[in-house]
Image (cartoon, rainbow, N blue to C red):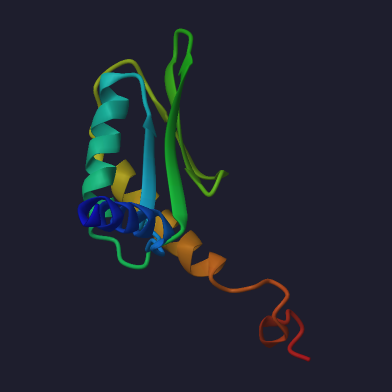
Length: 126
C-alpha cells in the first residue's frame, strides 16, 4: 500500500512540477530546390552557426524557379525580404553572394534592435 501511495505522489508531482522553458536560439529554414540553392543554404548555415545574438531571429532561404532563366533566391529575416539574388542555370561561384547576404543580415539584425520611434534617433536632431 505504501508503494502505491509513493508511486501516486511521484506520478502527480511529475505533472505539477514547473517545467523550464526551452528557448530556440535562431531558426534557419531552408526552402531551396536546386543544387546551387542547396549549396548557398549550406554555406549560409555555416556562417549562421557562428553568429552571436541570434535569439528570436528567424531566417528563411526561399528559392523560386523562373522558367528559362534559373532561380530567384530570397533571404527573409522575420518574414521580411532582406536579400534577393538571381541564379542562372549554370553553376556559378556562390561564396561572394553568401558573404553579401550574411553582411546584410547582420546589418538588419542590428537595425531591428533599435526602435524607429526612439526620440534619440530623431531625423532632424531636435
